[in-house]
Figure (cartoon, rainbow, N blue to C red):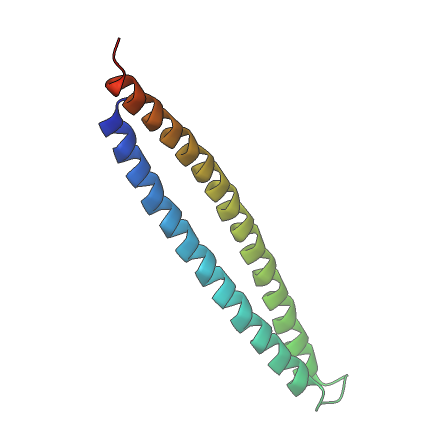
Length: 108
């Protein structure tokens, strides 16, 4: 792969890595918001009789939030896997660029 081609690919990977990092940041913010909402539901639920229909509704909402949190964790794991693959490819491209530059400037 030529220097120009590897530079273009490296730039693409840097942009993709930045995009994935942004998505991870959004997931973390969403999880923090979910934790706050879940804590609020727990606080509100303590004020009612355990057999009340309101408590059952709150428990259902907590279960939905737990499911959403699990989905966010799965998405985060997928993004982190993609990030590790991108970092590995970036390292490979950088080594290839260095080799290509050395080859271009070596006198035979």
